[in-house]
Image (tube, rainbow, N blue to C red):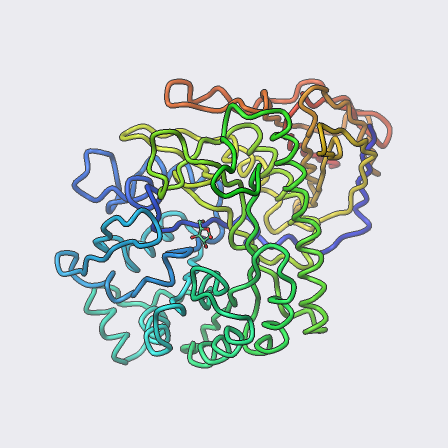
Length: 493
Ligand code: AHR
């Protein structure tokens, strides 16, 4: 099957933030997953697990969203600063009703971002907070000079401002963030945005709580009413095998039909970003308003025997394909999508890393983020794939899915997903400048759709070198095994 790469046409630069992540106070994401505390027998630096941080650092995570999610609209940031022994204990009402003692707060999160080398994206409390409280948080983080909040920050041990750039004005305001109507939220958003100030010359980037899936009315009303006060609107879209939230389907051991259902539903992301993007451009023809897909990924029934409120799920080759397809879509729509944050980093939903006590494993999704990381900041280039349709029951998908980009070093990265669970894909990639002997190298992640890593077999699914790449005049050939994700680098020098 033929793939054409056309570097003459581009949708623009792929914002590195498309490769962003999300970590909520939910289940074992923050506590156990990222944070174990300084007294833990698990090796840590300032309380943060060294193994997990080390693995995540390799992904070049550009931005991390925190503290929620639904948790954000119950979170009062002052509870999480100051001497740990004096911090307030609250109930995490959204996620399992567990006690949250706030030992991980603003300073600990900023330390995590420092260790990861990424930007912080704070989701502020609009649902149950106040304008003053949110405004104070920005002042606390970003005010360099003398002020009540900057003084408090210094008292708590941080002399220099944190200079947090990304601020979310509530989360899912249509749901757990207050059950608001778009008209009401849009007015509130204007009010909050007014009091989220720039300090010194540090410009903050304001992201409005956006639509659930295809709620285009939400996007239209918020963009038209509040668009001039913000920089971007968010979008949340999760992939569920079955739409029944009580019986979503299992993460492993699923049927062939569920495999196809998940892939077809994942492909819907293209329609969503296109349509929400079109509405944003209509409301703001300058193209200034961006789309931030700050929650995406698979959502299955929790693993048997685990707390239903903790959203712990396994992660298989099927998830790797979901990640590859979504990232290809975001790359190809980089003129619209300015940030995306997969949910969630550790032990929750479509995680990069799973932990069990001292043990840690990397998921197939982790490997895809690693294989795709050189798309960050590169120039998207147009691709065309001669696909054919494959189906199972009512579900139908193209057999392959692609995106490509050209880095500042001139190397082209082509990422290809083979959606077929039965057939390998023999690809012939056409591109000007390729000739016999051109250096083309590739990595491929493959396995049966349900294959996954366990704490006993942590490397059951891991990337391998592609060994059959053959270059010719203006083209090269390669083979992708069934249900696989490949990252191929073309160095025309
Ligand atoms: O990621 C889990 C939850 O999904 C988030 O807290 C919420 O924003 C969404 O409904």
